[in-house]
Length: 260
Image (cartoon, rainbow, N blue to C red; front, side):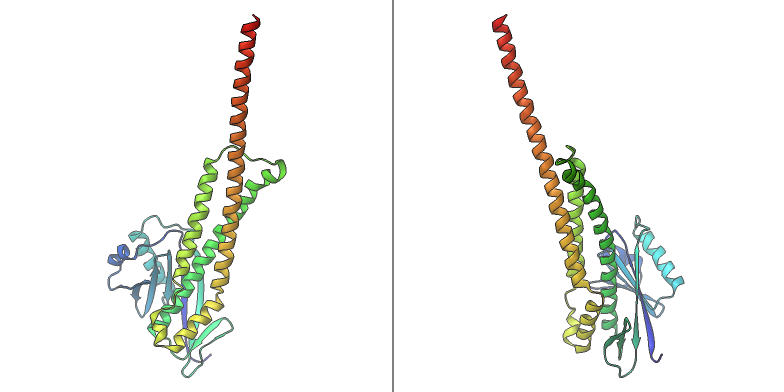
């Protein structure tokens, strides 16, 4: 296959990354608006605040070195991560296009490489959130099942409150990841970059995946709020019943005293 092949390898963590705090740990790094770019012996590593990193043309051995440095600079990063890779082929005179799942460009400039890295990072982050949402759906089904079967739910709501908070937080994080979909300013100066941006976004299906995720999260949130309302209504009914029984007991007690 003619031309030069470029490899982009993304890793998405559960935790977010503070680029300003990480910059001192990577001498020579360039801190931009969207990412922290670290030179790696001819290749480069992109770090994003939403917890994803992308290696561009970095050998596996060097990746392990940089990952170890990242873990030292940011203790507590989870070991359960999402990995994704993408290939770009650079051919002189080629038309920008997606061929067999590979991006073909006439020239991979630094600004174009940055856009590719960003989209691959977002896709890895989205896959991570898709797994989280799938787990939320499973847990929501377990909570709703007693309501469907018995018409009631448990009176314990503390765990439910935490669950609702997790669903809301996950939705907010997904929105933060997708805010980076705003087109870079460089697309105004490079029409081909604008095409690359649109083609990659369509290739990774980011907008549709985002819409599906937000709809599922909205459904989870609404189901949890319904379960919470039923639990509260049950608590209120039990409270009203307790008050009624106390009043009835007091009346019976007065009658007993009067009869006695």
